Length: 353
Image (tube, rainbow, N blue to C red):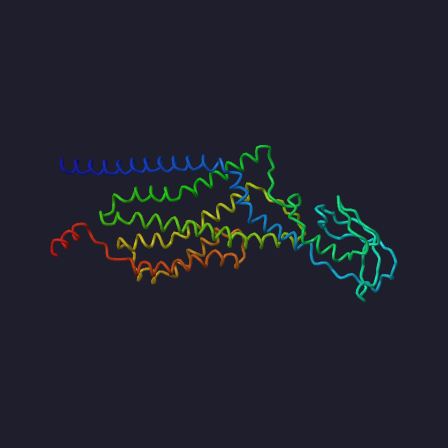
C-alpha cells in the first residue's frame, strides 16, 4: 500500500512538473512576443504601409478598370471647323493637375495627316503649363489617363473612430510581433516536448526550427503575393459590377490579411510536422498514403476557413499548395523517416559493434 502511495505521489509530482514547465514556456513565449511587439511598434507605420500594398494595388486596378477604355468619337457627326464643347467623362491627370470628370473644353474638327481629328480649339492652360491649340483631344485623354494615380479618397483603408489610427498601429505591431517571434515560439514548443524524446531525437532541433521558419515565411509570402490579391480582386470585382463605392475598414482589413498570412504560414508547416513525426518513428509513408483522402478533406476545410470568398477558384488557390506540401511530406518521411529506436537499443547496437 505504501508503494502504491509513493508511486501515485511520484506521478503527481511528474504531472505538476509538466505544468510548471508549460507555465515557464508560456511566460517565455509571451515575453518574446512582448519584446518583438515593442520593436515592431517602432516600425508600425512602415509595416502598415507594407501590409496595405496588396489592397491598394487591387483598388488601383479596379479604379482603372472602372474608368474604362476611351471610346472613339464619331467625327461624322461633327462639322469640320465647327467649335463644340467637349465634356470629359472620366477623371484624368494633366500637367500634374487632376481634372475631374465633367470638365468642359472647346474643341473643333480638323483634317490632320489626311484624317479627321478632334482637337483643342484654343490653348488650354492647366496649372502652370499650357497645352497648345490643335492638340488632339484623344492624345490628351490617353496621356492623362496613364498618369492618373490611385485616388484614396474614393476608396481605401479608413478608420471610423478618433482612436482608430492608434489602434491600427497597435494591431500591426501585435501581428508583426507574433510573426517575428515564430522561430522563438517554435523553440519553446520544442523545449516543452523534448523531455519526452530520446537523446538522439533531441538533435533535430536545428533542422526543425530552420525548416519551420523557412516554410512559415514561404506561406506568409504566398498569402501576401498570390492568395490575398486573388481573393481581393474577386471581391472588388463584385463591388465594381454592383456599382458600389468601396471603403475598406482598416481594422477589418488588417484582421483579414494577417489571418490569411499567419494561417497559411502555419498551414505550410505540414512538411515540418511530418519530418518530426517521421524521424521519431510515429509516421510512415504507408500511413500517409492510406489516409491521403482524409488529408484532402481536412485541407479543403482549412482552405474554406482561410478563404475570404465563397468561390471555388480562390479556395483552390489556398488548397493547392497545401496538397502539394502534403505529398511532398510523404517523400520527406520516406527519405528521413525511420523506426523509433530507444536510447537503450542504440547503446546495445554501439556495444555490439
